[in-house]
Length: 149
Image (cartoon, rainbow, N blue to C red; front, side, top):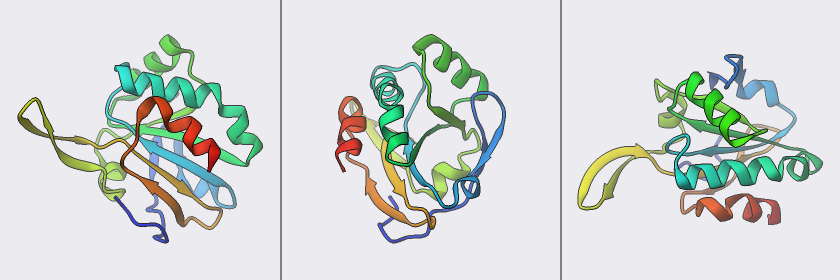
């Protein structure tokens, strides 16, 4: 996980509609960038639905919410449609942003060691600096906790 005070790494990734989005597009704005393991799974769905339900509250605070996973554009589009999501989802199949933001880690699950995305939330300020970082995210509570900050 990157530390608070670090300059947020630049990225350019396609969203669920195939439009390329870059961090520089949000210069002068706050961004809540959250990394999650996989579309249409229990925790990831709860997290994305909660962010979508609170999208207007985040926007009222001047914050753009962006989710990132290594799923494809098509997978993100299906996830958006199936769950009625309203937030932007970026596809990082090559794991460039995932690795730049230090969220690709060794994980242990049922005694088996694998690599994957560690659910992590960052808040990036108007100058592109990380002002909040959390890798101990509880998916269902993340949106509410971030709103409270």
